[in-house]
Amino acid sequence: QSVLTQPPSVSGAPGQRVTISCAGSSSNIGAGYDVHWYQQLPGTAPKLLIFVNNNRASGLPDRFSGSKSGTSASLAITGLQAEDEADYYCQSYDSSLSGVVFGGGTKLTVL
Amino acid sequence: EVQLVQSGAEVKKPGESLKISCKGSGYSFTSNWIGWVRQMPGKGLEWMGIIYPSDSDTRYSPSFQGQVTISADKSISTAYLHWSSLKASDSAMYYCVRRYYASGTYWFDPWGQGTLVTVSS
Image 1 (cartoon, rainbow over the protein chains, first blue to last red):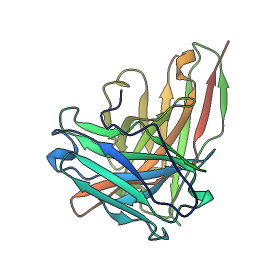
Image 2: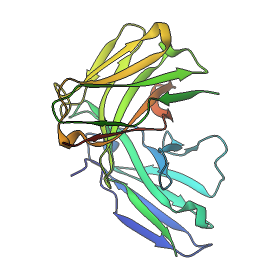
Image 3: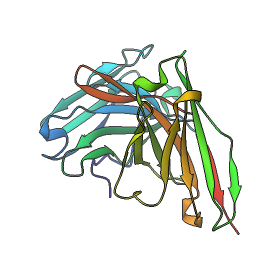
C-alpha cells in the first residue's frame, strides 16, 4: 500500500485529455512538500516529467502539466498521443516516515 | 550530458553476495546525493536509500535498513548497492538516481538505465 495513492489505470483516445491524481495526506503533500512526476515508457527506466508541482522537465511539450492543491496533486495530459502510453509515478516526501515516497503508479493506455 | 551508467544484469544463487554499481558523469559527483530505487517485476517504485558521495553520509528507508549496504567511491564517481546474502525476493530491477537540489527542494534526475538482478537456485 503506497503512501501516495494513484489510480491503477487511466485511458483515453488520441487527442483527448486525461488526468492522473495523486492523493496524499497531512504528512506529505498536505504538509507542503513538493510533488514530482516521472514517466516510465515500456521497458525503460523512469524519467523526470514534472518537478516542483508544475514545472516541465527540459524538452517536455506543454501538453503535460502538473498541479497541486491541499493534500493532492494531478498530472494532466492534453492532446493524447500513442507515445504517451506509459506508467506514471508521483513522488514526494513524508515527514512521518522521514523519507521519500512514491505513488503506486498509473498505467496510461491510449485507445 | 549528465548521466548515470549502471553495471550489467546479474544472475545469482540464494545466499551469494552481490555489488552493483552506478557511475556518474557530466557533473560534480560529490555535489549531489545518489539514491537507489527498487522495482519488482510488474510493480511500482520503492525508495531504498541514499548516499552523499562527498562524505559517504548514508540514509536508508526502514524497509531496506539492514538488508542492503549503499556505498560510494568518489575517486571514480561510482556508487554501489551491496547484498551480503541474496534471497529470491531480491530479484528486481534496481535504479540509481541523482538527487537534484534547487530552491529548497529536490527531485530525481537523471535515472540510471537500471540493473536487473535475478536470484534463483
